Length: 141
Image (cartoon, rainbow, N blue to C red; front, side, top):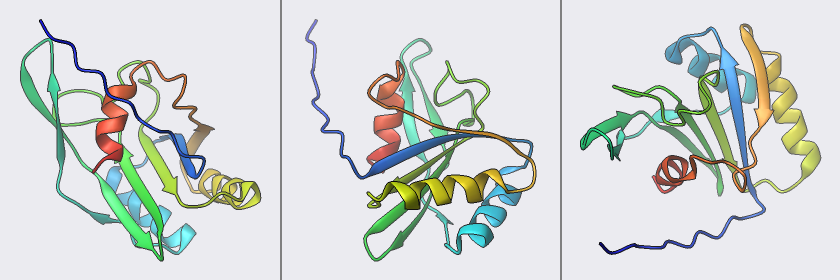
């Protein structure tokens, strides 16, 4: 058996938030776009091989690029299971790539928290996340 090691450089300009909300994907997407004045649009689904079942699992991804600042929304639930299984209470991951100013990130977090039916929002430290492979696959999309 061969083992493949992958080195991922974690950039200082990537922020990831885990969001708990009672909203559907469509409603939350609309609210997020309206609140942040962005235009997240659906991209091709990405797949992850489930090692246990040996089957592909598909997940949606929404993206918006605004002059080099990239926003992504990834629902935690896919067609068969969760993207990050140990974070069952998280419904969405919101990823921002390209903003380094802490005050801007905090303003975005406050804006998301104010969206109707957003129950919880937390910053995700990907250096300590145990199910990192699935999230890395999503970030590469």
